Picture (cartoon, rainbow, N blue to C red):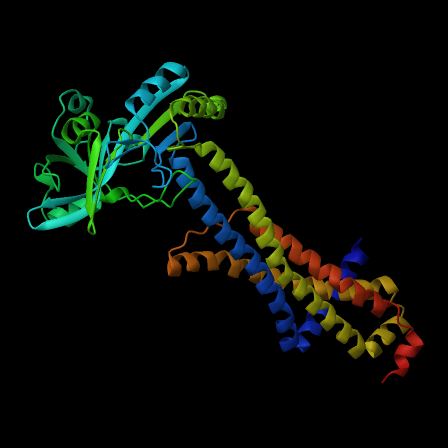
Length: 428
């Protein structure tokens, strides 16, 4: 055992000397593995960050929720007109009652209605959404209070003329003033006293076929009962020379199910219930749990594709090691012949070259890990894109890099060991 240790130490020292004799060549060989390891880590970190953001947006909708949205039909499909100029579509309060009566595993049900409106406060104007909601809406959408208070049940009971406004609405309409207690006017002549302001919330991308991108910072939230009493069920809209009237009682009904296992079956029950009472498909149902599962499945495929793409760099690095070591065998033919003549076995020659390739692989892997772990933070800082390095990304990259280096160094080592000592000594 002691002799084996001395022999291995001697081989390692010889390998280091050999690499130091060709510093530039060794550096270029190592560079292939450095970029390979770093690219695997960085690409997977970017993919994981994008996936986490998408899954976070979906999860913010609530995996226990079933979201039903009103969908405006195309003009060619609209057959529910009252009179000549009023388009009637979407969810109704009767639909809300039917869902409450038919579905028994509801933990909470949140109706809401919103439509685009122009707001005014003094000389300042802003175009955003006015939304009739219930107090549970704010917690359900992850909205936090910046100042003042949120809507309360008493506001709904008393049809209070109050509102909570988004962060951007407050900044645009009231500039550097405190908006609490001040009044927001609408283009329809309604006015609401501001009782609260929500914190800034990052706008969400469109999720699912029934949910469009939302910017909750430009909203004005009023009690749902106040919305119906002040605005009625008919929405009047005038924009860019066009005038329209639409009857829309509810824009969305969010049903929170008390058992995660019953979410999908509840969505099916709600869908069949609405189909019976709607002559046209003027609603869409989104199940965030389905979207989350789809996003996770897509991420696994995406990670595999990106990982395989980045692994090509490791393959190129391995080929580089093989090429350099084959060249080294040709250059060191006489050295190999002398060592064999002095009693070195074929296994000693194989070990000598494997130690050299392993050393190159180890150096390239260590540097690649450093670059790969540092680069995602730089990408986030420069682009604002979220990145996340998972524990398995550097582990897999390092393991593959070391394996590639050793495997691709095995063939040159065997070729060196197979050299005939007499023939090797003749090559001067």
